[in-house]
Picture 1 (tube, rainbow, N blue to C red):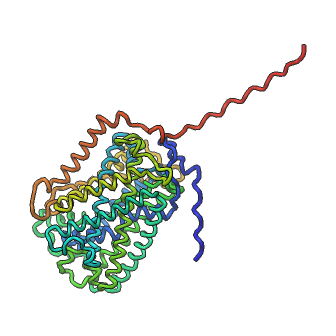
Picture 2: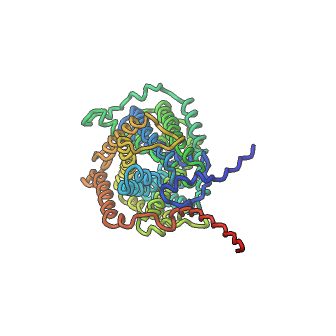
Length: 524
């Protein structure tokens, strides 16, 4: 095997963009091109998202729910293109927060960062719970609580497994970006190989044609808008997967040549996820032995894999899914830490000076790593006795991410219309396509946010006990989080906003004026 070329050292130009924000470089630049790509694709995590949510999409919309995958991709690709332009112009930590601040103003930036930060903490807990969907399928040994038949056996065991994963992501992130990148890159490499192998294995076992994606399985009956109503609900399974590509840019201060690498990584991550994920979903529908099997709506792709590949190969593939879940949780935790660091560096969080402190030994902000891990663990506790409430909270987390994205694309559109937007010279640019792409990104973001937040029982209160506050949970939680958070910011935090002195860029000294040469004294 040929030796891997050493990572080139960072150049002074890598830190040039930080000067515009008034920051001095503190995080270590060690991430290359593939590391940056891996950060984006591991957050999306093809195997995590498709395996975690296939059951919901199938139960809500039947095989035809597959069409939501290209639909969501088309909309999110518009958003990704806008983000790629921003990443080329502003490749700094806390991408969403800093982008909204630049194209909008400090108030919009804070709200976008706040919404994304809360959503990220919730997402860590939600991703970690995916262990329960996979590990007990591999072996009953992993069902530590009861035998899985008790009222709260599954929910409580999910918390135990998820807590172990969150402790792992906290420790890894505390030890620095280099360790995180090595684990993340290795995990993504294995995930991509496993994904391709799974696609091939499913393809050689197909028992029906691609026309399966036209079947609705009668899911439109009883819906107000017929199958359209069912499809809009099922589309949430795809919407819950295809986000997080901005993470590639959030590590901009730790990447080499980020203004070039981050835009490419964002686009490659979402395109690769669309192609590979779409193939897995359609081939799963074409290869499963029985489309009417009840377990398709409960166990989802885990059932399909075991049904098609058999117990030995199927369980081997589930171990790969487990690796994907692990690196996904790691990437979400990493992105949340960088966002908290970016906001604290601007004195935009309580105890900002401590939160923004970078460990001289590990080169990473340790305190926000621990705080975010502890908060994610605390959220998990809701799942022990109230898994339905946890489902509501995790769904709300996704809504808040879409809102945070909208708080970037909408101010960006306003900046374009006012002639204030200037892409980076010689870097990724949409050119004359910028305006129509930006308009589509905003329209998509607004429409999908409404679809996500709509108070439908099928999404927010699907099983007993039925409560109005569960059904309206998304509207209430997002409203309280946004209004309450912004009220705190307006009356308290905004009065002390500003780059902390210890993180501020040091202005270069002006060269001293040359000393005048001593006058020659001539004897009289």
